[in-house]
Structures are given as structure tokens and as C-alpha cells.
Length: 159
Image (cartoon, rainbow, N blue to C red; front, side, top):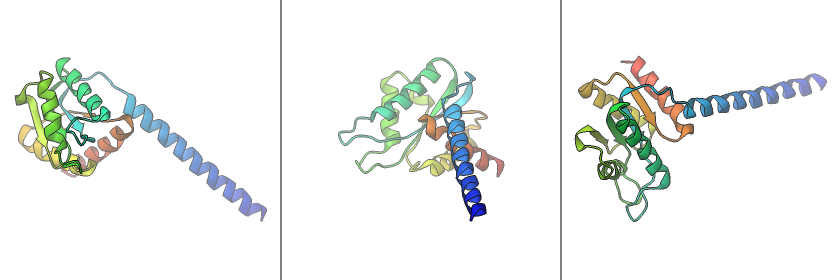
């Protein structure tokens, strides 16, 4: 019985440690910004409200993309999102927002079929075939960045 309790303690400590380390890594990776330039920023979609306005989270993502472009850190912006239950294509609404904030139409690429992270990555790589971008900055909430980067790394390594 004592051995079982020791084993269970070890398992619980291991799981808590793994979770803590994993969480810290995601937070640090998601919040870090090296300040480097890239060929393109991929901005992941989020909720568009029923009245067609953007959710606060989506506006913040787009504001980050605008800042990256205006500070000459990216040359192009890819907006990616699907058709929400509210009846709007997220990427189309994202493009409208960018244009209304002085981002030229010519630098915006639209993916209206990025219904989830995996599809956004797959669709981004289709744009890669045409535009040949070599470097990417992922724009999303901090907890989503690591996952997206990992999907990208896995897909690119298979190419």
C-alpha cells in the first residue's frame, strides 16, 4: 500500500509539474516578440458580432497587424477566419477593418476558409506557393500563438 501511495504521489507531482512547465512555456512564447521583420503576418480570426462589428479580441489582433505593417516589420498581411454563426466571413470583415485603418488593399490576402487553426495553417501554405514568403509572424492571443507556430513547423517540415 505504501508503494502505491508513493507511486500516486509521483504521478500527481509529475502531472502538475508538466502542466506548470507547459503553461509557462506557452505564456512566454506567446507574449515574446523578438522585434524581427517578416515577409507576412498571419492574423487568425475571431468572433464577429451579430451586428457585423468585430469582437474586442479580433480588433486587438488587427491593431497588432496594423502596427507591424506601419512599422515596416511585415510586407503583407494574411487574414484568416471562417464563416461565423453570425453570418459573416471573419476574414472579409478583418480586411474591411484593415482598409479602414489605412492598410492598402494590395498587401492584404484573404482566407475565408480558416475555420480553425489547422485549416488556417493549411490555407496559409497554399498562399505560400504563390507568394513565396519565407518568414511569418503569427498574430493571435498569446495562448494561441505556440499552437499555430507548431502546426506551421510540422506542415513546413513535410514539404
